[in-house]
Image 1 (cartoon, protein in one colour):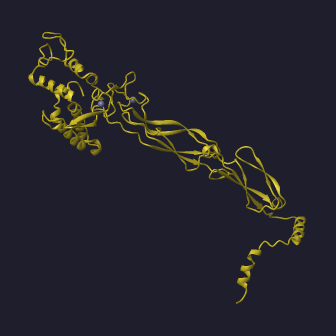
Image 2: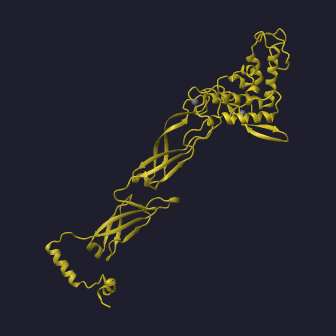
Image 3: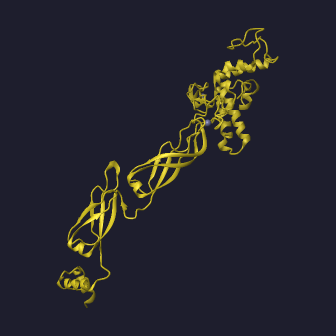
Length: 392
Ligand SMILES: [Zn+2]
Ligand SMILES: [Zn+2]
């Protein structure tokens, strides 16, 4: 809004209310129009959008009783022709304008000075980010990205750089929305509170400040890159610490690392979907690691000591004589880091390998062994077999 808008624009007509409309009526008219013209309700309709801006601008002045009073005074001056003659010279009937240069016959000045003093910094901007030009703060969207880790990294934890595209804090203004070297200012309309109290009879309601979109700040000199929004689209590298023991399919939330917010709104969150590549030896069951180790028939029968790999140093595992195939041994603390730093176990399952080929000597030895073996491994089938084969 340029300074001259105060003189040239009829905010009452814009809102469709009388000059002596009450504040509640002004608010009511505004709300009705804002609902109808809001960009969300009229996607792609440039006409509605510019009308929406006009309406917001009008309301930003008329909703503020002191601003409205000043606006009325200026309109009155314009209407009375006091600003004629190119705003030169003195004789301003509305005495009490601060900073008015001289009295009758004083030095020349233009309306910018006058209004600049009247409205403070707000009227001094004139570059699009002034009242009504800045949208309400919006939270950035949540973003989801994928990362694939090899098994060892997932077990030990790793710091990795994720490439995420989308809206990010503007790199020119670092997200402030202000031209480098300048700063956002406190919104003069709401004094930085982001809302305005409007009296409606005995009640007063807090409404979002239209001048600053509820942010409490204004940007007199917007950043040329992002035009004041504080955000731009680009690819970001985000350093993320993936905790030790992360599971395949886990979803890690990085608060505030999603898309940048608009107009001072908070950033969204980043969700990292973790994929863990399978390991050639180890499997996983909760916080336990699993591994299968083949043993020979004689090792299982006679007992042995196995050297078993872990994620770190190998460990020695004692397999007692007479160990059946499929038995699982537990090596404590050699699993995956779990919650609270407690590690799971390594579960070692032995798998008895049967020799495919026997030498003549081996065959003889096994035949001699079999001749001495009177164990009945299928005794539990006897009853079933008797029932099936017998008559009534
Ligand atoms: Zn910027
Ligand atoms: Zn404000």
